Image (cartoon, rainbow, N blue to C red; front, top):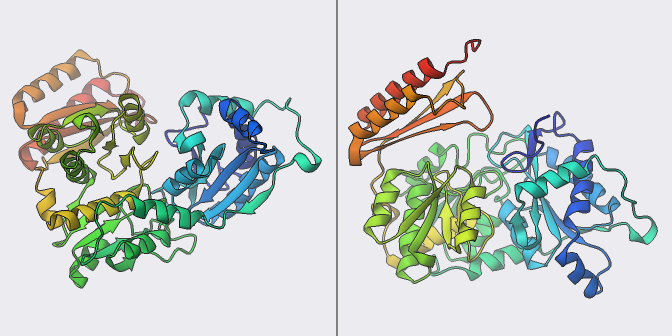
Length: 458
């Protein structure tokens, strides 16, 4: 039986795989697992009778019934629910820590289309759950032996009235420099950032133009946001703005566009922020944490400036793990998940955008000037389908990788990795030119296809 939890919570087609009944059961199981331990002892010592959980969602329409089911499940398990309504995922994580809640629940499918949804949990302090805790929640869904509270012991469901205000104040408190004089176009992906991001940037002093901030429950991520940057680039050019900032549906990502409409991706954003933090003495151990998919140009630029790059497996959870293990202050992914450990426990697209634009204000430089700190190597990523993803140790594949690596030398790199969910091998090649990257990637993909083909694959 496949594991219920994926790389970022439980996701699926809302009212398909992800039903109200599943949401209710997940909520009851999470209450059983996440309301014990040291935090529960402290709660009892303080005289608070019941555990508390923060509940939030993005604006997709299915979040309404799934949120109701989660709230019902938690309250029926004796948990007081503070319903924050529609706010970004990182806001939910922040609020768990800010009010010292026992845990939090976010209902969102991030950058996925509107019919999908997901349920993710944050432990005490707003931290993501380790795999073993998720497994305990899944096991608890099948354990019906625990007594259920009755009478005055059931949980209460109340509106978290100042949730957004607390988050806005927190974000503004982190700013190294105000944004006065800068014109920022914000693309909120018709998502969870639609209200809060414009408020924060306006309060930080920026002149703002806002697109993609009219959520109707079904238009989230639809041709807007960090996965569709054309509209943002066009708006920046049309309005003569200094910079464009794009979020995804739950606002844990940030990508940017410079004044000429050029995309500035997560690697470039991390390079700019790492250099800024180092200059100001805030980059712990002069180290940046990134994934193996980060561009070679990022590694080169950081090395040239005395910054070590620690690389992890793909996924912001692995970046977070390494950051927490090493006490590092900055990490992230090419996709725009950027994590400031000093201010947040997860990727925060509004926080990232604020600090990026703040660096423009602090230095007086344009985004293009700041982004020039790294040269982006042409990168080609091919998905080879219908192959044995476990077969990358095959000698023929290894020989081909070694030959390609030798050919590229210091001017490129090769990465082959299996998909985590399907019979696919991802072939990534970076080289000094787009033509070289494409040629080497296609050559390697052909070897993988020939050597690792699954016979009955279509």
